[in-house]
Image 1 (spheres, rainbow, N blue to C red):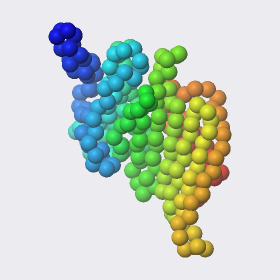
Image 2 (tube, rainbow, N blue to C red; image 1 turned 120 degrees about the vertical axis):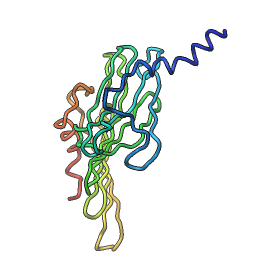
Image 3 (cartoon, helix red, strand yellow; image 1 turned 180 degrees about the horizontal axis):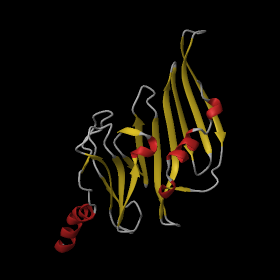
Length: 210
Protein backbone atom coordinates (compact mmCIF):
# COMPACT_ATOMS: atom_id res chain seq x y z
CA UNK A 1 0.00 0.00 0.00
CA UNK A 2 2.81 2.41 0.85
CA UNK A 3 4.54 1.65 -2.45
CA UNK A 4 1.29 2.21 -4.39
CA UNK A 5 0.67 5.52 -2.59
CA UNK A 6 4.21 6.65 -3.35
CA UNK A 7 3.67 5.82 -7.04
CA UNK A 8 0.50 7.94 -7.13
CA UNK A 9 2.40 10.88 -5.66
CA UNK A 10 5.13 10.55 -8.29
CA UNK A 11 2.77 10.10 -11.27
CA UNK A 12 2.21 13.81 -12.08
CA UNK A 13 5.97 14.42 -11.83
CA UNK A 14 6.69 11.43 -14.08
CA UNK A 15 4.20 12.58 -16.72
CA UNK A 16 5.45 16.15 -16.61
CA UNK A 17 8.98 14.88 -17.11
CA UNK A 18 7.87 13.30 -20.40
CA UNK A 19 7.05 16.76 -21.75
CA UNK A 20 10.16 18.42 -23.13
CA UNK A 21 10.02 22.21 -23.46
CA UNK A 22 12.02 23.17 -26.60
CA UNK A 23 15.27 25.03 -26.09
CA UNK A 24 14.80 28.79 -26.01
CA UNK A 25 11.16 28.52 -24.89
CA UNK A 26 9.49 29.06 -21.52
CA UNK A 27 6.02 28.39 -20.17
CA UNK A 28 3.72 31.34 -19.53
CA UNK A 29 3.42 31.91 -15.78
CA UNK A 30 0.76 34.60 -16.12
CA UNK A 31 -1.59 35.71 -18.85
CA UNK A 32 -0.31 38.66 -20.92
CA UNK A 33 -3.99 39.55 -21.44
CA UNK A 34 -5.27 39.85 -17.87
CA UNK A 35 -2.29 39.07 -15.61
CA UNK A 36 -3.95 35.97 -14.13
CA UNK A 37 -1.79 33.02 -13.16
CA UNK A 38 -1.29 30.39 -15.85
CA UNK A 39 -0.63 26.79 -14.92
CA UNK A 40 0.01 23.73 -17.01
CA UNK A 41 -2.89 21.28 -17.04
CA UNK A 42 -2.22 17.67 -16.06
CA UNK A 43 -5.18 15.42 -16.90
CA UNK A 44 -6.09 12.21 -18.71
CA UNK A 45 -7.01 13.99 -21.95
CA UNK A 46 -6.77 10.92 -24.21
CA UNK A 47 -8.47 8.57 -21.70
CA UNK A 48 -5.74 5.93 -21.53
CA UNK A 49 -5.66 6.10 -17.71
CA UNK A 50 -2.37 8.00 -17.83
CA UNK A 51 -1.87 11.71 -17.28
CA UNK A 52 -1.22 14.06 -20.18
CA UNK A 53 0.26 17.57 -20.02
CA UNK A 54 -1.06 20.75 -21.65
CA UNK A 55 0.65 24.14 -21.49
CA UNK A 56 1.45 27.32 -23.44
CA UNK A 57 5.02 28.32 -24.33
CA UNK A 58 6.81 31.28 -25.91
CA UNK A 59 10.29 32.22 -27.12
CA UNK A 60 11.77 33.76 -24.02
CA UNK A 61 14.48 35.83 -25.76
CA UNK A 62 12.00 37.83 -27.86
CA UNK A 63 9.45 40.53 -27.14
CA UNK A 64 5.97 39.06 -26.83
CA UNK A 65 4.58 40.32 -30.14
CA UNK A 66 7.57 38.91 -32.05
CA UNK A 67 8.06 35.66 -30.13
CA UNK A 68 6.83 32.34 -31.45
CA UNK A 69 4.09 30.96 -29.23
CA UNK A 70 2.47 27.54 -29.06
CA UNK A 71 -0.21 25.62 -27.22
CA UNK A 72 1.39 22.22 -26.65
CA UNK A 73 -0.31 18.97 -25.71
CA UNK A 74 1.65 15.90 -24.63
CA UNK A 75 -0.36 12.67 -25.10
CA UNK A 76 0.90 9.70 -23.14
CA UNK A 77 -0.92 7.23 -25.44
CA UNK A 78 1.17 8.43 -28.39
CA UNK A 79 4.33 9.45 -26.52
CA UNK A 80 4.22 12.61 -28.59
CA UNK A 81 3.78 16.38 -28.17
CA UNK A 82 1.36 18.22 -30.46
CA UNK A 83 1.85 21.93 -31.25
CA UNK A 84 -0.74 24.58 -32.15
CA UNK A 85 0.99 27.65 -33.55
CA UNK A 86 -0.36 31.07 -32.50
CA UNK A 87 0.56 32.32 -35.99
CA UNK A 88 -2.47 30.48 -37.37
CA UNK A 89 -4.58 33.17 -35.63
CA UNK A 90 -2.03 36.02 -35.76
CA UNK A 91 -2.31 35.54 -32.01
CA UNK A 92 -0.31 37.38 -29.39
CA UNK A 93 -2.26 37.32 -26.11
CA UNK A 94 -3.60 34.25 -24.35
CA UNK A 95 -6.10 33.67 -21.54
CA UNK A 96 -5.44 30.93 -18.92
CA UNK A 97 -6.45 27.51 -20.23
CA UNK A 98 -9.63 25.84 -19.02
CA UNK A 99 -10.30 22.11 -18.78
CA UNK A 100 -13.67 20.65 -17.87
CA UNK A 101 -15.59 17.49 -18.80
CA UNK A 102 -12.72 16.31 -21.02
CA UNK A 103 -12.82 19.53 -23.09
CA UNK A 104 -9.85 21.90 -23.34
CA UNK A 105 -10.69 25.58 -23.92
CA UNK A 106 -8.00 27.77 -25.48
CA UNK A 107 -8.57 31.50 -26.08
CA UNK A 108 -6.11 33.69 -27.96
CA UNK A 109 -6.33 37.34 -29.05
CA UNK A 110 -4.72 39.24 -31.89
CA UNK A 111 -2.83 42.45 -31.30
CA UNK A 112 -4.55 45.68 -32.32
CA UNK A 113 -7.64 47.79 -31.66
CA UNK A 114 -10.02 45.22 -33.14
CA UNK A 115 -9.22 42.77 -30.30
CA UNK A 116 -10.00 39.79 -32.52
CA UNK A 117 -10.40 36.69 -30.37
CA UNK A 118 -10.31 33.02 -31.31
CA UNK A 119 -11.66 30.48 -28.85
CA UNK A 120 -11.08 26.76 -29.45
CA UNK A 121 -12.80 23.82 -27.76
CA UNK A 122 -10.74 20.66 -28.15
CA UNK A 123 -11.55 17.07 -27.24
CA UNK A 124 -9.79 13.77 -27.86
CA UNK A 125 -11.77 11.63 -30.32
CA UNK A 126 -11.65 8.07 -29.03
CA UNK A 127 -12.67 6.49 -32.34
CA UNK A 128 -9.93 7.95 -34.51
CA UNK A 129 -7.47 8.62 -31.67
CA UNK A 130 -6.89 12.26 -32.54
CA UNK A 131 -7.50 15.73 -31.09
CA UNK A 132 -10.70 17.19 -32.54
CA UNK A 133 -11.98 20.75 -32.75
CA UNK A 134 -15.57 20.55 -31.49
CA UNK A 135 -16.30 24.26 -30.96
CA UNK A 136 -15.06 27.63 -32.17
CA UNK A 137 -15.77 31.13 -30.83
CA UNK A 138 -14.92 34.30 -32.71
CA UNK A 139 -15.20 37.83 -31.37
CA UNK A 140 -14.07 41.34 -32.20
CA UNK A 141 -14.68 44.98 -31.39
CA UNK A 142 -16.77 47.06 -33.81
CA UNK A 143 -16.84 50.88 -34.08
CA UNK A 144 -20.01 50.93 -31.98
CA UNK A 145 -19.77 47.79 -29.85
CA UNK A 146 -18.85 44.11 -30.13
CA UNK A 147 -19.63 40.98 -32.10
CA UNK A 148 -19.42 37.51 -30.53
CA UNK A 149 -19.99 34.29 -32.44
CA UNK A 150 -20.21 30.75 -31.11
CA UNK A 151 -20.07 27.74 -33.43
CA UNK A 152 -20.82 24.15 -32.33
CA UNK A 153 -18.96 22.02 -34.86
CA UNK A 154 -20.66 18.81 -33.74
CA UNK A 155 -24.20 20.01 -34.47
CA UNK A 156 -23.55 22.88 -36.89
CA UNK A 157 -25.51 25.30 -34.70
CA UNK A 158 -24.13 28.81 -34.40
CA UNK A 159 -25.11 32.03 -32.65
CA UNK A 160 -24.17 35.61 -33.51
CA UNK A 161 -24.52 38.21 -30.75
CA UNK A 162 -24.11 41.93 -31.46
CA UNK A 163 -24.11 44.86 -29.09
CA UNK A 164 -24.07 48.34 -30.63
CA UNK A 165 -24.79 51.94 -29.87
CA UNK A 166 -28.08 53.15 -31.33
CA UNK A 167 -28.37 56.86 -32.11
CA UNK A 168 -32.13 56.39 -32.27
CA UNK A 169 -32.47 55.25 -28.66
CA UNK A 170 -29.21 56.79 -27.41
CA UNK A 171 -28.23 53.57 -25.67
CA UNK A 172 -26.54 50.23 -26.26
CA UNK A 173 -28.78 47.70 -27.99
CA UNK A 174 -28.41 43.93 -28.18
CA UNK A 175 -29.43 41.47 -30.87
CA UNK A 176 -28.94 37.73 -31.35
CA UNK A 177 -29.24 35.49 -34.40
CA UNK A 178 -29.12 31.70 -34.75
CA UNK A 179 -28.34 29.47 -37.69
CA UNK A 180 -26.99 26.08 -38.71
CA UNK A 181 -24.15 25.16 -41.02
CA UNK A 182 -22.72 21.66 -40.79
CA UNK A 183 -19.07 21.14 -41.63
CA UNK A 184 -18.20 18.80 -44.50
CA UNK A 185 -16.02 16.69 -42.23
CA UNK A 186 -14.67 16.59 -38.69
CA UNK A 187 -11.76 18.96 -38.00
CA UNK A 188 -8.59 17.78 -36.25
CA UNK A 189 -5.52 19.75 -35.22
CA UNK A 190 -3.58 18.46 -38.23
CA UNK A 191 -6.10 20.40 -40.35
CA UNK A 192 -5.43 23.76 -38.64
CA UNK A 193 -4.46 26.63 -40.92
CA UNK A 194 -5.11 30.34 -41.31
CA UNK A 195 -7.47 29.58 -44.21
CA UNK A 196 -9.48 27.15 -42.09
CA UNK A 197 -10.08 29.68 -39.32
CA UNK A 198 -10.83 32.43 -41.82
CA UNK A 199 -13.57 30.14 -43.14
CA UNK A 200 -14.90 29.28 -39.67
CA UNK A 201 -14.90 32.93 -38.58
CA UNK A 202 -17.03 33.83 -41.61
CA UNK A 203 -19.91 31.56 -40.56
CA UNK A 204 -22.93 33.75 -39.79
CA UNK A 205 -21.26 36.76 -41.40
CA UNK A 206 -24.59 37.99 -42.81
CA UNK A 207 -25.66 38.77 -39.22
CA UNK A 208 -22.58 40.82 -38.37
CA UNK A 209 -22.66 44.62 -38.16
CA UNK A 210 -19.98 46.57 -39.96
